Amino acid sequence: MSTKYRKQSDADLYHVTIRGVAKQIIFEDDEDRRFFGKRMRLLLAECDVKLYAWCFMSNHVHLLLKSGIGNVTAFMRKLQTSYAMYFNKRHDRTGHLFQHRFDSVPIETDEQLLTTVRYIHRNPEDIPGQEFDAYEWSSYREYLNHPFISETAFVMTVFGSRDAFILFHHSWAPDSRKARDIHPTCKAVSDKEAIELAKDLLGVGSISAIASFDKQERNRCLTTLKRNGLPIAQIARITGIGRNIVQRAKQ
Image 1 (cartoon, rainbow, N blue to C red):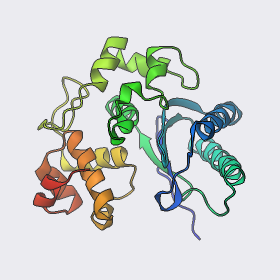
Image 2 (spheres, rainbow, N blue to C red):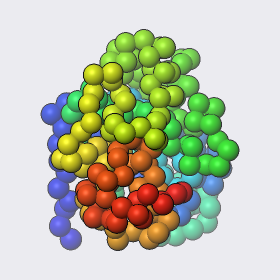
Image 3 (cartoon, rainbow, N blue to C red):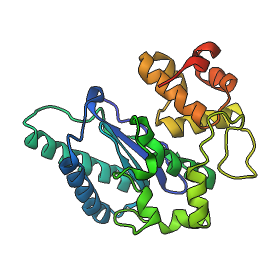
Image 4 (cartoon, rainbow, N blue to C red):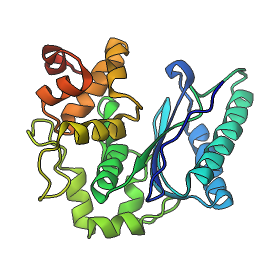
């Protein structure tokens, strides 16, 4: 099997996603999450990788990592292998735990960085009744209180202040006609920029692949793009999905 080529970031910043095979749960309880977090913290130092943001969901994980792609690959390989061994032993199961190695999206600009941090922190809103700022298993509260796993100084420097960080996270505008509300000077983006933004938000390598997803996953992706302010007509253009389907899509 050929090795998947990974696009490298000139800034050595990557939005990394791992998912359970066939969307299965990878965290049965908080004990699993604690083990994953402890193992992750140990391997960050061992592999010389910095963690800027994270979120543990039931069947997937989002990480924002800073290092060369070689270090990131070594870190993820060790983390996924050791956690899968732990999980299989604890829960008396066999076989692969993760869908594949991991997905990585290179981060190149401050705007992309801020969008990614917010997307990671607001992921828990997919859980019915869950407020993202009250979710225990993400780095959001590390930014407001005391960092434990994450290195928050760099990202906070980009935001400029604690108030700006909070305001930006609460500026989610699903009915906005502009693709970016991450900075007052940002304007609506071109289709090319929208494609890159969509890849970043969804953690996919090809936007056209969304059309082949099952209805639930397809609608989740379309809803995410709308929540980030991409116009319905633009989403239809870049995905090849009918405008009416995009408009009706709900999670």
